[in-house]
Image (cartoon, rainbow, N blue to C red; front, side):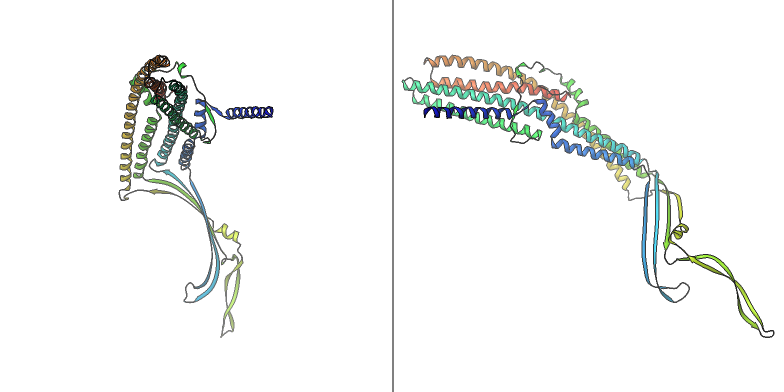
Length: 478
């Protein structure tokens, strides 16, 4: 019976191990580059910007199509019935008729104050604005992905450190319990050790929640299922040798002003407003157009037409003296059927002409539109300068932050090493009873805090350096 139980427990453990292994293998491994690529391919904000970009392309094509002539055709048919006055008399008659009219018109704008050409230029600039907006969204998302990726790495290290701190706290609690049983420590020492374990568990819960949240944010950037298991590849930060920490802020600003998508977007928008002034001023000039047309009609009341004439002699009287007939001769029309196709052919007419529309007064609308366009340009110029000023201040602050982060990392490393040595010495003395549990717990707390500070400071240096690379237009890699 014991053998069966042993086999049952062994199979259960083996099955659990296999399932755990499969669960781990099912996790998708995400590198920084794959996270960036998937974000650029799947993020809905980027797709929305690309749709706007496509609309801009259609508007540019339509502006070009506006140079082509307009061609329209129309037809009208009606059935008339009822009473109407007979022409040339005071009598009325009842009649019915079917009338059909058709025409086609062609119009070509020869000159419109340059508005059509300037509209093409403006729509091309607007398309550049849309492309710049897409590029800006992509760059911002790449920076966000890198930021969150580094935050994940930071949180993973903090979780590892928190678990190590729990192990140390549990070991301390075990030693305290043994010392208490032999009378070397008091109940207060046991309580402090238990409090240290509770604090370590609380820190683990907090850091694990932060890690889960940062992983969720990364999945949202990539438009992944929030419940899909992923594993973030961990580059060895300690082996990174391309982390530059010294920059000339002025050089960074000069480079960033030429490559930063925010600045390029502002400059493109400024050019569109410059073009809008030319479009508005075009309304001051005449519009010259060429036109031509074709037309014809049909009516069923004209179902007959004259196809010839015949001479007719008719007696109109008699001469009484001679009894001689008095006759007259006249030509009488001969009518034949008049088909619809014949009517359309006979009624076919054409027209061609030149139209000139000269603006004289339109309630100052043109002048107002020109003034508004000029003010929009002025506002765009101010926005561009504000964007440049903000970028300069941001870069200078980023350079200062990087310098500060480097100093903080050096200080945090020194503090960590000092607290590590202090903890080792305190532990040795605590094991032989030369220090109490309060001193040991204080040394342990200082060590834990300095380790967390060093981890955060190390990633802060990497992040601050990558921020500068972002402003310089470099590809962010780890």
